[in-house]
Length: 203
Image (cartoon, rainbow, N blue to C red; front, side, top):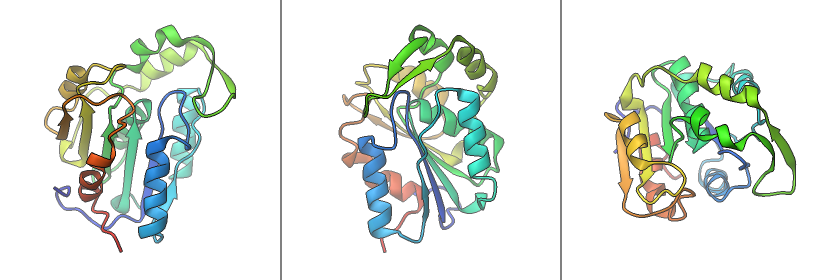
């Protein structure tokens, strides 16, 4: 079901998860659909820096002149956390889709401190101890205007607890999937519902 008071989307932001990139399967699927069916939409899926503060600064700067009433955000895992951070700082009209969103990344990423690589390349990066404090500082106190959120949550997520995700976004439009996995390998089954919520009609 489309979001209440849905207005036409002209700008769409996609945020990938931890160790992921714009080359993730879901990001490419969304990008390809937009380019094929809605080339009128401004699509942006940036490579997010490891630093949470730098990531939010990049996103805030890159969307500074976007019309929020026609803006939508899709975030996967850590990208879902960032999408929530942005939405809670933005106007209530922004529509947000969350795909297995991280709820407590400061806690969950505490054991990832150190050097690691991205999933889609051999590029190495450092996840620093101070990033944990940054995540804690930017965590929204509460979810406001729940009607603007749509969470797709897989009960079979092997990384995040689906109960915690569902509790965090209680009151929001939600699609609970039996089974599934963290990557939402069966995203095809939810893609139409996601587009409908955002009001993305095929043209």
